[in-house]
Length: 80
Image 1 (tube, helix red, strand yellow):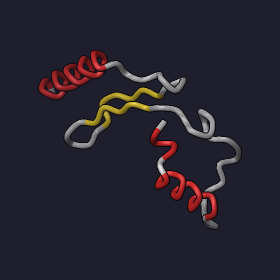
Image 2 (cartoon, rainbow, N blue to C red; image 1 turned 30 degrees about the horizontal axis):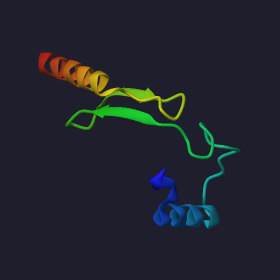
Image 3 (cartoon, rainbow, N blue to C red; image 1 turned 180 degrees about the horizontal axis):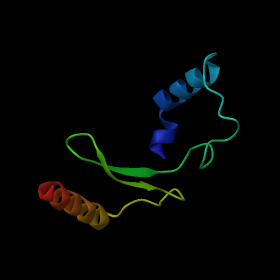
Image 4 (cartoon, helix red, strand yellow; image 1 turned 90 degrees about the horizontal axis):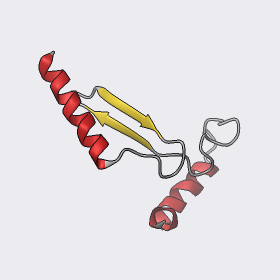
């Protein structure tokens, strides 16, 4: 909630909406005006190991799920 009320966020939003060279979105972004969450597991070399795109505002990896994915990615990278 505080992120939405932050004056810096509003200023960036206003600047973006007033920009002449902004890309056309062709309507509302996926997930509505505020979008949806996404989780990314990125390896130290920059490769993306796992991705989760949320379907609603609170759809995200749990800590246990994230730790499991991290351990699995570590095992897979050590085996390679």
